[in-house]
Length: 285
Image 1 (cartoon, rainbow, N blue to C red):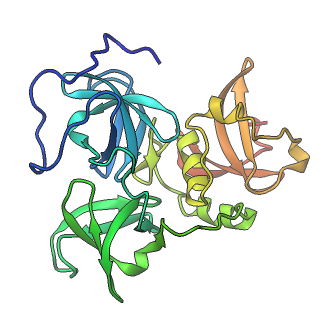
Image 2 (cartoon, helix red, strand yellow):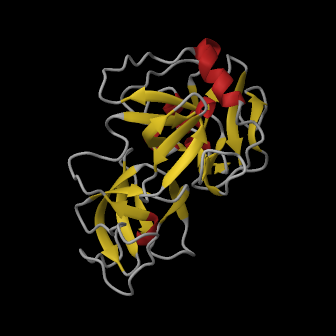
């Protein structure tokens, strides 16, 4: 993606900060997303095309800046412009946020983050599924979080999976049945171009999120997913649940979904949101 007049430092008016300890990164520095779901734009302009999104707790690398915007690369090697006040510089540049120690991995589509460990407390924000947040401490009912904007927050313990990043984790290849169960949870989520969260998903963001929940990182868009060297070509009659199915026009890949078997697939469709469709449908055949 071309950079329009990149400036390798931050210029312009100072962006508002949530707290004094939140620092704006400059080019080449590691940063963390502080907003719950933040847009990546094609240009440093809030009215330009949304190319993707980044979730709270995700690490990005600043590659340049222009005014109140940063040009960043996300963990899946995708690039776009993000508002500088939506990220914070990481003090320890060798250690991304939520990369060590106890971490809460959100397991529900949406989780309320409270100001205090009681449901009567004000809600600070909502964390979406697969977001990873640092843990300060926990008890039988609540988890205290070190949020990436330096505040404390609390979630119900049963809404997250707690892991210790300092311990070796066994990562299993996802079972087809589990992939289908996860994908089905998103049925009815609206379509959103560039969307990567339950607030709204595009086709490639949907399959990427399903696989991310099962610890597999896929490229961001359908063309990159199609050309991923880890993929193996198969025939329609041999499709298994969890396989990716690609569609195109004139030799160019324009759409992706996830097979439920040899006859049906689930996808994020611009007309209906996340839905199940038949491969016998002339539109997809």
